Length: 294
Image 1 (cartoon, one colour):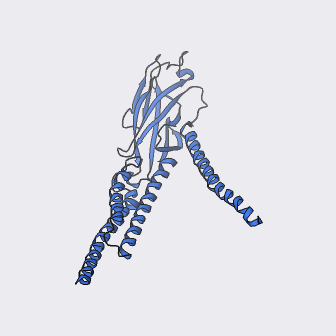
Image 2: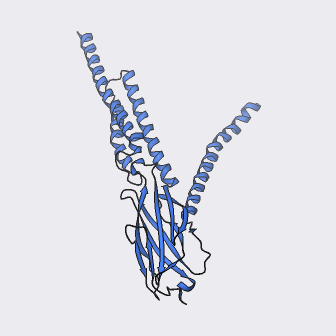
Image 3: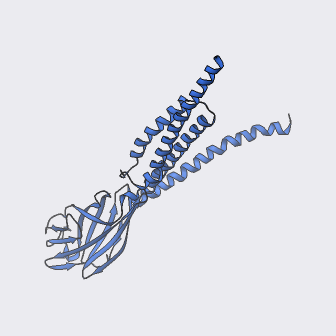
């Protein structure tokens, strides 16, 4: 056996190993993004000055950011410290928490009672949902706590459980006892990647329809039913595919003008051209047969 023929099986084994190694690397990279995103979603950020012994810790947990209603839904509670708390950790006196919100702007926590969890809604100050999947938003927050008509220092523990958006708080400051900060919100990596994949997939399907139409028309195959069935199925399959993208963007978003409308137009034109030109080819072939028979 020659050296070249002996080396051939070795090369084949290496060729089989390449896609396996590539699949492992891609999967590992994808999972690393997931675990990084998962760790980020479980992160709590402490904003403000938590050094004063006498203060009110505000616990702010974001449940959902809704771009349609332009609101951010969250749960708020407090944890009084120092002289603002009794021996059990409950408010020593009634604590009133004022905040910039469209719902739950003023919450009273009764003295001697366990501070409950309250639902609030904050209006978004920036962002348009039709920018999907590149849309981003901004929310502004303000907190002021008082007990027995006395202002209490405030710090905020900020966390989010929204799986569609990642929130990044910034620009925290205290002025005249009012603690303010902002938060930027953008689509999570997984959601953004899925939306881009759908857009790319629509483009690939439309190109496949154009190729099928070119084959049928340039080859003068007439009414090539498999190609027309393929294009007709694509035409109607794209609608549920577009509606399956997470977040429910309205018609007229970037995903539509960047992929969906173009894909539907290309597939429709491919199907129409295939039928019209194919019909003319079939008529020409029929006339040729009739002429040959005569």
